[in-house]
Image (cartoon, rainbow, N blue to C red; front, side, top):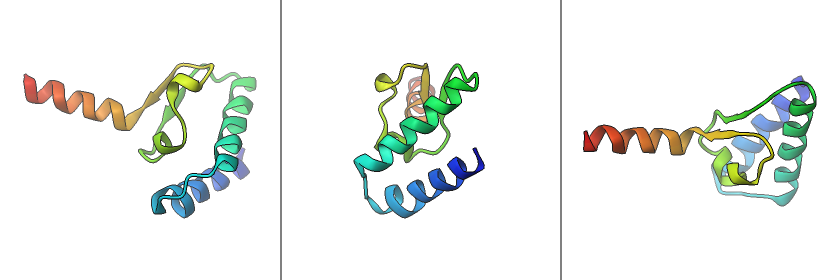
Length: 81
């Protein structure tokens, strides 16, 4: 899975951070998630805010948390008090 981390890093920084969203990269990340699930993962955390540009948590078979959305929801809840 070290190769997956390196590839995901490249997708984030070489593509998503510069506005490039490729269907091939989405397929690669979905395959990474499937491998994680096969290894026992029971959920997904979008630990980098750019992942939400590539994937929608609703598309996944596992529970998923988009940290960008979670942070925005928490900020609004805090602001509204």
